[in-house]
Image 1 (cartoon, rainbow over the protein chains, first blue to last red):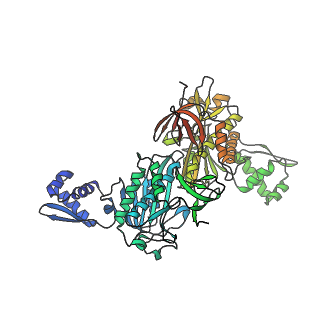
Image 2 (cartoon, rainbow over the protein chains, first blue to last red; image 1 turned 90 degrees about the vertical axis):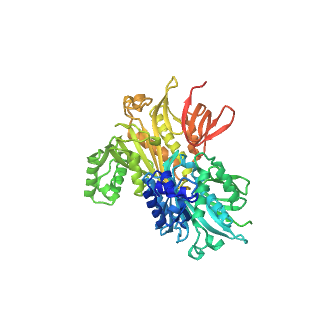
Image 3 (cartoon, rainbow over the protein chains, first blue to last red; image 1 turned 135 degrees about the vertical axis):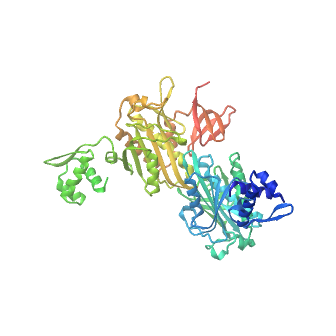
Length: 315
Length: 315
């Protein structure tokens, strides 16, 4: 979206504005205002023109302009109806030097999960990969992954879904019988030096307005839990939370507090497959920079930096 | 170096071997042995043929075959007389899917240091970038950088230079008056997911057989300290130490012990510029995964994950 169009939308958000006033505020001709209003209408914005000027009466359901409009986070949006992988798109943007941009698709045909696993991403989901360049060391990157999980959990809560996070970053819905179903996953990729990230792509896949039948076994969707949601509002809320938790001035320890609030793993008996072997015990806490603390049966506390975590039933 | 040539060298390393015996051991024709002997001679190996067969009497001073010959670490060598940046070459190899290969150059015309700083790399230095794919999380990558610094320090000691490491990975020579000069630097770059590295390039630049006058102010060289060294032996020793400290079965905590042995920073008053601000105090330890522990004047212990460290004079 170009700057004039963005400024025009911002001006219209406040109510009716006469054409001449808009032209003056934006520093462009009245003809230019007219042209941008037309362009916005083509993108799906409903703009009425009456005696008291132009008035915004409808925002498109989804797409780049819709997502940027009203977003309280400094990210641009690149939207595709269909793409192989939003993470791959974001990586390409990273190679070109871009930053602070989120690639969103209605459908991914080659979605990827962690460790090159396949990720099913049919039409109607929220498939979004955010490219940022935090001036932080790679060691702290797990915090960004946790922040993305918190962002999904919070947005889910707002639509009435009690989503919980399985360490490190799977977002689950747990039913009354304790059965866990996967609602969202996160794939964080990066490039950098040992002490500073060059770029970071946080890819989040939320099974939103999709049938659970179109997903792998063990998955659920927002549709299955509460019916279809406003994807625009949901994703905006996610991006805002992520930005709030990770922006440069933010105290990154707050991410851990927020994560604990939504954790499914803490207090659970877990089995974690780590690069160094299997660790089983009680998950007692998460600590900087996103490691799981597991108390094993001999009373020792083990700090797990990475691995696949399984929630075990209590013995 | 092809496999036959490598096997031939290994066979010759033990002493004189008759041509027919070589042909049999290598499973090739006598004509093929002859051809490979010629190829090795062209690469600078001196091979005599006498009554009792072929005998290796001289190894070239430097280059791919020379570095691979006798190297007790599972790395292949790619050698260039001159290249823009060995790290860039290694990154390209990474994109092509390669691993366990070290790119070595006699001269770099566009050498890079940390944070896109320029690195002066004239002919005669040891400029080497190792590409590996450890199945570890990015959070642990600082350990690999420390291991590379230890590798340089150990190889330096063996040629009579008392090299010490300034946290995290500058290798210094400290003279009698306490003045520090930089002997080597390390640039570690990586790509990966939040919980697993995809590739890791550890670039090490050692000011070896170069005049200190050809280096930036504050730098020294092995030549300036002890005269010219055998770069082949020096680099092989570095690669062997790095492999020993980081190989998959290795206990990575050993890296910290080895680092402490060669540290210039521990016990010093330091000033560290971190992304979160300046920390000043006494450097008391290094801890997993390579963080510096600084005791500030109010007695608090701060753990520094990344930053530029300056050694201060005692007050």
